[in-house]
Image (cartoon, rainbow over all chains, first blue to last red; front, side):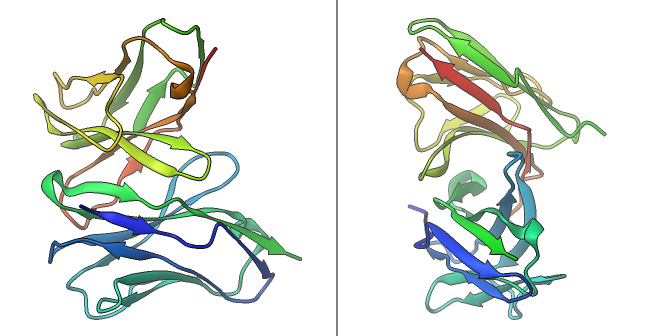
Amino acid sequence: AQKITQTQPGMFVQEKEAVTLDCTYDTSDQSYGLFWYKQPSSGEMIFLIYQGSYDEQNATEGRYSLNFQKARKSANLVISASQLGDSAMYFCAMRAGVGNKLVFGAGTILRVKS
Amino acid sequence: NAGVTQTPKFQVLKTGQSMTLQCAQDMNHEYMSWYRQDPGMGLRLIHYSVGAGITDQGEVPNGYNVSRSTTEDFPLRLLSAAPSQTSVYFCASSYGPMNTEAFFGQGTRLTVV
């Protein structure tokens, strides 16, 4: 069975600093995809970044990067130069298994302080 | 470009009532899913579909039915609403392969009293 674990219910970061949001996953599949989504207070789900299980390099998208450590089954999101608008809930998710189901973790609330 | 459209945005039901949450997408996506979001539990998969005529259960299917008669539509039916089904419901669609992100609707906030 697929499982995503996000152990940080909430995080604070100072504006302009970098922050790492933790994500570990569990699957018996060799082929899988890892995703991060942002959910601001308005409620919509915004796709941030993707990492494939066979990708050798860590994914980057602007200020977002994914620190992929396959042996440790971790896929941490790094946000550089935090902005006030980064305050939101962040979800780690994995696509694997029958039907390529997308399964989510419990989320981490990030608050950026000025 | 509408993307994924969910209706209604808000709904209040009495215990025992039934209703259908609508979801439609105009991107010709094969894969569609329903999730519920509850505080501290993230998004949990209710049902999903890999194409018209094909549906399967997710993590929390009890109390919900789905059908997929067309590629575009994936309605979620609550058969007999219970207070435990008070939640925010999201519909999502994607092309399906491993590396494709899901596109989400705006959500439906359902309260069962």
